Amino acid sequence: MHRRGLPLVVAAVLVPAATLAMVSVGRAQSPARPAARPGTPPASTAQGAPARSGRAAGGGGPVRVMALGDSITGSPGCWRALLWRGLPAHRVDFVGTRPGRRCGFAHDGHNEGHSGYLATEVAARELLPGWLSATEPEVVMMHLGTNDVWRNRPATTILAAFTTLVDQMRAADPEMRIIVAQILPMEPKDCAACGRRVVELNAALPGWAASRSTARSPISVVDQWTGFDTATDTSDGVHPNRTGDRKIARRWHPAVLAAVTGRQLARRDQSTASSPSSDQSS
Image (cartoon, rainbow, N blue to C red; front, top):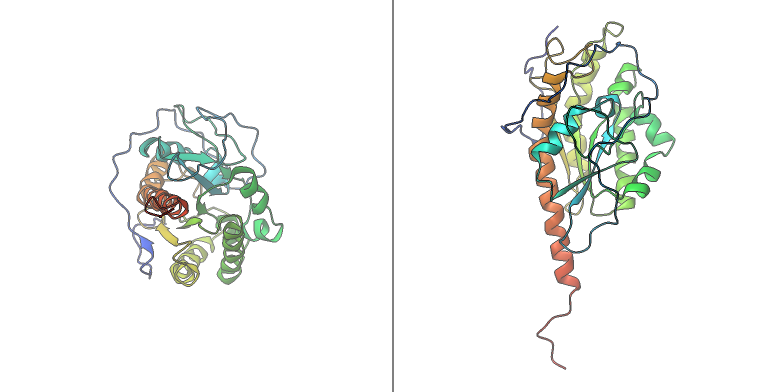
């Protein structure tokens, strides 16, 4: 079954797709991956990624962005390489405890994509606080829930885990910008109900995000579902191929750029507020 723009009810926090001229990945087509849920990915090689440094003070320095997810994010997650190439390099620093993997060109590949992980397990095992502490992101872009759907976790349970993860992000940084994806459609051979469950989760996400978003730490929702076709954009009904990678990168781009800009403005405002006034009399 193809997925071509089936309607979803979305809230005002939904970030619409924007047209972004992305150059295709300069690599050979990856071999088809099995539809079975992957385990822990093999050790990978970082590409073009500088050493991590402390969080920038004031308005200077690139904004630290964490891509959080499962195998769609991390194995190899070449949509991250395309996204990185389409963003201004001086403004964005991708961070994570996992190095990048080969995508045909050098890129900042650090990420937090863990193959086979469930959002519910990441929350229950309290894995995220350690990742946040190690990398200090200022923006988190999250595509999680695919493995939860595969394991038949209810949408309400997945969203409760998302709430826990958001609380942990804000505990690490009260100013965190958070971007959450309506996840890709999926049609694995061994899960006939997965497509319907994805629709249920995605339909509930905008309302959840609106209820949890704050002025200090806004949550935006990016639609990664509409227009993504499991027949032409995946290698196995779940994992994106080169065409899928390009679509994913285009959808993330405007939301990530907006979050980075917002964070830089917040830095500037904080720096101004903390500076002594030159008009003060002695």
